[in-house]
Image (cartoon, rainbow, N blue to C red; front, side, top):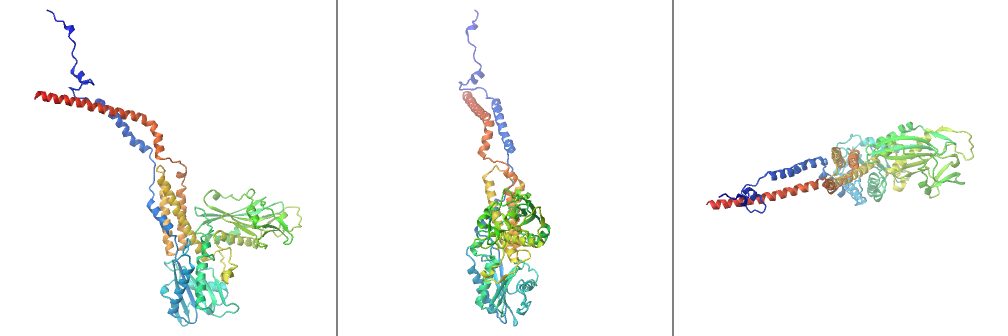
Length: 609
């Protein structure tokens, strides 16, 4: 009998049954080929992530944030006060050590009373020392604090009989006597401010007080000890420390006409209002050598000064003048000064430095036309200005020069070309020097010194006396140090707030050198070396400004880290998400199949036992 094989169904292979998702048993070990393939794709994405981050990395040179914060907190909590050394020298018939110590104590107490509790930036504050020397025919005694100091007055180098000449002769004699020991080492390199009291009878006036052009003053006359203390304290504080200004004035309205890079351009312009009347030229190079070169040298520690000149034509003023019959001149008053400078016609900014960070100070000689000549500035009290000029803070100064041929009824039929005489040019530049002094925060002159209780101030050929230069060095050193600290602090905050900002190595070096220069300036200031401190402070500020305004910082717009991810996420997120989900799904499948196989293996082991 034949078998009917067609009625029996074909059995399913065990491997197929195990591969079925509905089966709870699996007889073969699950393969890892699909899992490894999926994970390899995921790992390829993950391995490419460091290369992506590296390719988009922002280079940031390390900055000394801690040093910047330390400098800023130090300067903001306590403004730098540079030490000042004062000495009083009394040339009198007799004296003893007890009197010298008592006068030293009284002068120190008077200086403390005259000094404000809110010290001026760059002033001496309470950081000063006083010594008293009594040089008499019977001997020489010195107060306790000045004993053994080689920088102080050398006994016997001068006496009251030898100081009876003219003021200029006495000034040079005292300077020679005070410098006889040479430059002192340390403690401010021998920069000691001295007041010499010469006790002798003088005719006419009771006491005569003169301030020299170096670092000393002297008073002549018979005075009591109380008057000596008062006059010496006044000279030390109001003159040598504050340049004749009150304590409140020193902290307000101080002009710092120096660029951020420490440069100043003195631009001198000769303006011929109407060349159809006359044209004037000047021998500028000659006046530069005579009058300007000493000033440039004297102000070198606080500014890198360059000088330039030009002659312009067809440059009328903007304001309107009127004829004053009583004065016989055309008048422009103080209320016309804001409109005097004609910015439309006066093309003064021709310097290349005008486009940089250097400060340009304009000094203009205005030659009026024949229609308004002579042109005179009238003061509010009705008097005419002696200088016939004015200043504009942080801009410069103007001097109106009326030519000698300036006659109201003159008739000219041809052009006149002339050169300003050397004498007139020197007078004009003497006015400019006074204006420059005003722009730097000093008095233009001390002709009205009697209101300060001073008989006379001696002028220096350089335009600035030594004690005035010391004052400028101190104030500019303090100002530049504060400006340096503020700039570096702003740079530090900016860099830390923008993690994606590029910081070049050059910026890091500039910050480092700026901190080193600031540290050197503070060290020189503590020693009383004013000029060296001013030079280092100017360098520190210039380097800080260079770092803050570096082109690599200003030329790129920086974005936050969120914006950075927003740029790259649309490119990588969709693919990365699918790969990640596939890897998770495959990992779950592999774990499930492996659990089935382990369950089958456990059943087989149980049945065999």
